[in-house]
Length: 501
Image 1 (cartoon, rainbow, N blue to C red):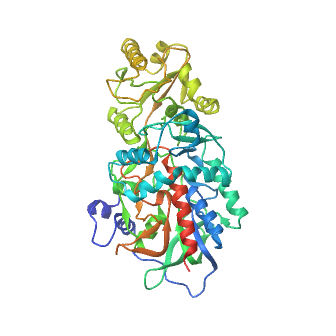
Image 2 (cartoon, helix red, strand yellow):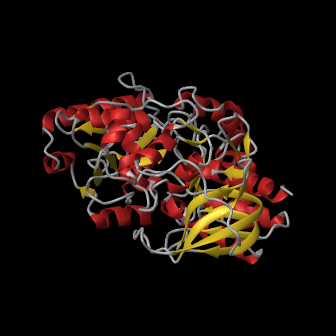
Image 3 (cartoon, helix red, strand yellow):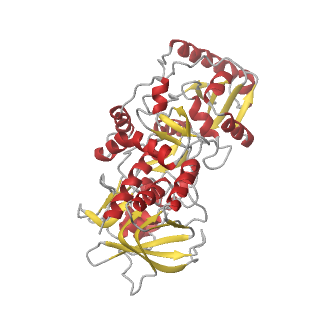
């Protein structure tokens, strides 16, 4: 870590956010780019980022009559949204109704606040809970994305997450991109935002960018200035792949922890906004995904299997053969518990659990990487992972007793009504070790997606949505709430940015 940042620690100077201080520690000056004598291009609305939030903003801004340019520094569209698992949390959705599951926005809000340790900004969390289902229907009916099944994620009270037909966020990204372009939005890649351009009052006028940027060559690209007559929407994602920046806020997150994120998730747009006077919040809360495997890189395919069998199969410490935490706990709870072991955990499910809960294509891909393995017997499974056989078999028998009674007195795991004892071969197992997944902190926004400055007032002309914004999730984001968050606030940001005269 840079010596200056290390000496500074986590203290914050009056009038400067933690992210802004990180920028100073990296040799960047506070402030924004000066207005150029001549703008290279002019649009009503500029959007930074081509994920769920950015493309949703582009669609709404075009529908509001604005000319729109969307930029992305990477050579491909979609950011983290493309590698997202494709689950959209929405209380009261049609899939729940078909399954007879009772749910409500109030219950989802309660779950979000519990996971977030009450640090969620209430008006933001409530906006997501109350508007999730209408936005799921917008994604289906207006955008044309296909959703096919209902899933559960740890920390939710009920199954409320609806998955895309291809088990990937790319289904929604591709449909959003097509709709945005159909409506007339321009979308360009290899264009990196370097700074916001502001006037003397601090109002955002546009962006200083580099055209022809070739990630990760920071010397590449040619400077240009883009004017936004009405507003700028930042939808640039988080900073999970910037080890130095994440270590400013959580020094434990060294290179020893990989990341599920795409390689461009490095937070430059967030830092640029802070340099220009935007306020940041909760940057210390960085989430690790507890369902990734050390036996495959990045996000991988293991989460598609692991998350489908929580509540249907057991997770054990291979050093003891015993369970050590509730399988349906939220992401932070499970990740912390696995890290405390000091080595990967093992989760397993039998043919009945995997066959009824896991999409065959996801299972096939996870097995092709070698991260998920199949065994004819529990004894063979134990031997393959170096687990003492007798204690392990005794623990499986104990778990099966809990499944039959639908109650776990050891760890209070949620056991679903259709769960059956883990007894039918073949058995499937995978090792789990957490990776950095989501940065809950980011720019302060209000419920209109306006970015708030240090004067506690909105920064004129600046909006943010998705992972670049903080406050929605508090300490922990529940799985599958990201899609709802991004689409909801992306649409709000796009509409409001287009309305600024």
